[in-house]
Length: 369
Image (cartoon, rainbow, N blue to C red; front, side, top):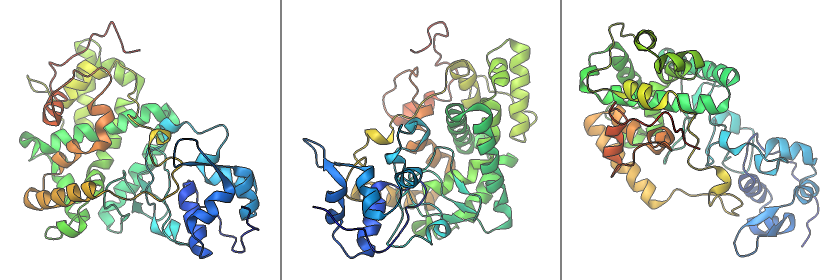
């Protein structure tokens, strides 16, 4: 089956998925989505997925191959370094999407994109029930500034080091926010205040999103990442007592707690110093080509199980407002919570506990292959 060139010249959005683009085109032209997929793709044997032919899509849309490949990561040749991209699509800033007709736009975003710094929207990590959050309060300018520092971190140390360091920063912030010994610290009060701006008390069941909880600690997570990703500071973290003291003092400055010292039984900082500082950056557990969404012909839907978990989390958060616990239990930080060299633990609670225990170390002489 071959279609003539489509009459409505709708362009793809930047980083849009192929299924999102074809679904929007079908909506604009009032066609069944299948009628667009079949002329521009070939079936993959043994599956219900189809491989899009860039040349056919170019003929159908009237847009050059190169333009389509720049916008649609799945059509690029050579393929992108998928490790540097999130493994699932998500909405972006509504103002960025407003000029694209035909329905919602689903994009594959790089791991380092949390804020639309042009329009001041938090787009955060993918999360069930997620929508972009306008950062229109004066106190939320630090999230926009953190995104810009995050981009500089990627340029300075590379995508892999920045990915590991920012997720480690989230993990550390989650532990300290959940630790009762830190509840009077200025940094925790700041996270709590941001949390109330993002998810106002009394409106949790309507406005809760784990992604917004991550936003509350994002500036400090990036500050920590700037230390964690730097080779010189990593060397000090695993060095002699004087070097480690310098590293701990720097962490105290970042967290506005000059008297900070890891407790005798350890904490998330002590664990990272002992177990992870000398190891290579952890990688994502899953990349987009490994997911069922890759080359699927239908837009992804949030499962009923995910929606149920989201509703239970919203109810729990409304009762306790414990943001650190939300961060620690969210799948977004799993690559640094469960590392290749981590001691296997029985269950998520034990895994979270181990990630702040200095007693769970690895053999530095035999790094993972």
